[in-house]
Amino acid sequence: MIKKEMIAMLLAGGQGSRLGVLTAKVAKPAVSFGGKYRIIDFPLSNCINSGVDTVGVLTQYQPLRLNTHIGIGIPWDLDRNIGGVTVLPPYEKSTDTEWYTGTANAIYQNIDYMESFNPDYVLILSGDHIYKMDYEVMLDFHKKNGAEVTIAAMPVPLEEAKRFGIVITDDNRKIVDFEEKPEHPRSNLASMGIYIFNWKTLKEALLAKASQPNLDFGKHIIPYCHENGAPLYAYEYNGYWKDVGTLHSYWEANMELVDIVPVFNLYEEYWKIYTKSDTLPPQYLSNDSVTEKCIIGEGSSIYGKVYNSIIGCGVTIGEGTVIRDSIIMNETEIGKNCEINKAIIAENVLIKDEVRLGDGEEVPNETDPHIYNNGLVTIGEKTVIPKGVSIGKNSVVSGITSEADYPDGKLLSGKTLIKAGEDR
Image (cartoon, rainbow, N blue to C red; front, side, top):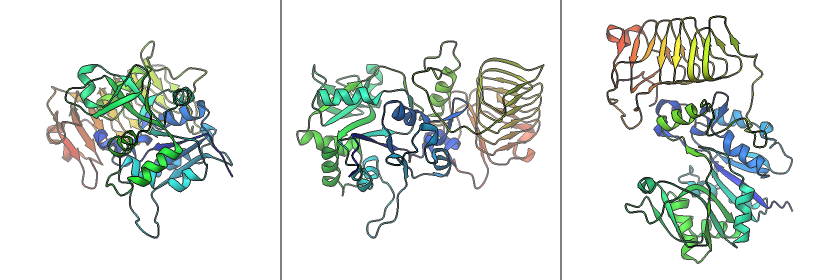
């Protein structure tokens, strides 16, 4: 029988609705990051760098691009005969067929997959965080303490602790209590949604709570283990970790990559981040182009000026165009003499000549102020923007738009322009 010491289950089914139009057609873990990567590359690379060679990736929402990206796992050296990477969508069973309804329900529906490796330990990961972590060190901590469940936790400022699941520990880091988004936190150790379970403990908890609707780790499985006397420990992590769940945090995490000394270093020799790379020609910078503090993906042609920005692969930026503090994803084409400030532009967008993005004053977005804020302009995938229009801050545009969509050639700050058939 196959025997693996530890396997990983990577939850990558999330819609990521707070990323607005960026996730209208693609699962959040498949969103581009840092010019050439996708968000899921980070936990997958952590697995292979930590010696975890068996990963189940649980997909659900808009999985096509994610599945194509992962393929058979070659970029991460996860194309193994035994183990490797397996994409696990929900599937039809003879009874009780259902979508994954909660983080732990998704794991429960794949008990047979996990059982087939007869693991000692199961590592549960989320597919939408940017960080580097050696899971082997966490496993050593788990074993040393005789834990049945270890939760990775990181210190957060006490005033922010009410946004997280908080763990309360004794002096040996044994968890004595936990609180989900407490009004008055008793600790500042926030759960990162990364868990190591003894397989026996996890299996028993999943079977015991299987009928619970929207079965969730934080709300159901971990409290069940705690109530039944399983020793729970908190593994403290102090490195860089970013949940890129909002447009602003996504924009910030990308911008931090172009700092002179980036907090998050993509260039470390001993902890590489692997990704599926298409065969593309090198970047082309024309005589008149200017680039300062940028990451520019392969196959991109720059004829204009780019400052403090992340440019994906296969992007074209026309003559006379000036781009600042922006993220431009793969295969997007920007015409001549455009001005683009603090924008997030998704993949395969066409922006014609003389367009201005990020004009005017900041006004709250009219439809989704909780999504489109902090002065950003967000442009959805495959959008077309006609020549000569100006678009204000905290605005969003998605779909094939024409001059008729811009009264007086303008879309004012805070406006939402999503063409029929497009999702928010």
